[in-house]
Length: 461
Image (cartoon, rainbow, N blue to C red; front, side, top):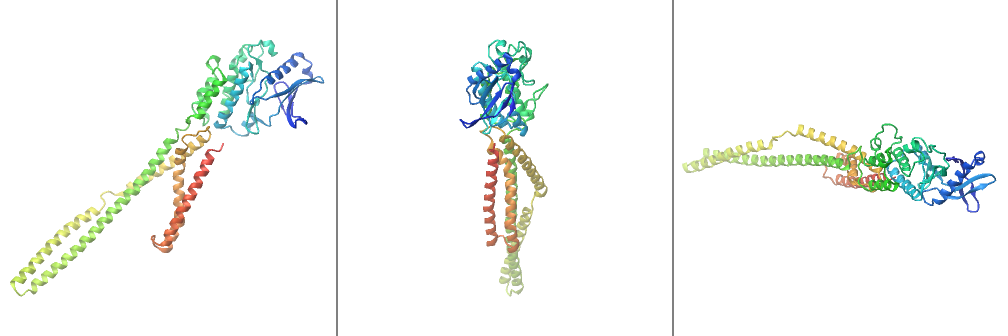
């Protein structure tokens, strides 16, 4: 099944209890050495003492037929190393795993037991995602003499790259803070997929993790143990505080910036439509006024022509004088209407040319919309990798979905309404109105479906 710190393990089945167990047997050659046998029994006593849901349980241990055995809980799953090889652990998953490791280690430390070999191979994940710490084979009782641990005087015990500096420099003077250092290495590796060797970058620069996690991880990796967290319970509290608080990614400035960006572009589009509509209304209003003035001018011209004919046809001075007066009045009205008509035509002519303005404004709208949408999807992807509550989800979804939904709705309207308008030739036709109504219903259904799918994707762990 696997090889632990001191012996290979197998998976026998207990028929009476109808369960599988993990059986660790000491090699026969080592079993003849009292020191190794005592170390083996010590691991059994320690594990039997540690009754915690996140620590592999011990059912029995002892000696039979010259072989020393340890009968333990069988964890049906994989270790953390195997899980990391199968696919990169997301920050959300890391934030769920680390507090469980901290809880188990804090319990062991409270019982006076140090692990001293925390690494991905010794952290198990069962089929239900529960975390279990295994292999206390090189653990020692806190405060106990090194000889009691049977590790050999002055001998460095642990796994390279995961060992705290004091485990290498002074193995006999190791306390629970060595486990905190090893936990920091595991945490860094979970977030970045790399070990913190040499001059390493903060985890948030190599992943989409919250930038505030840097302080926690880097503090746990301090060479001076007095500068680390002083308990795994403290690490757990810090991690859970970040998981519950608003998301801050070093590679993402947050969802609200994109929200404002896309909202601004939407306001630009609405403003353009309103400005063009107002311009057209003003133009057609002036055109209607021009038509009315032209009609009045035509009527005044007809009156002048009539008055002029009456002047020619008049037989008496009085009648000629009256007709001349009407002709003069009509001519005055004609001149007045001509001046008004000239002013109305000048007013109806746009003083601002909207062509270049439209091109600039539409270009700005599309640039802002595309940039905002891309950044919105980046925000959604980053939010998906953090622990709930995912604050900023609404803004990110609005930003990421507004422009695609508008484009989708526009396409649906074109598919439904344009063919109907082309066939019937008038947008006021009943068939065209029916097509527009069906298009609106289709847009609503599609929009709701897309929003729901995005929401489920965002909250899928």
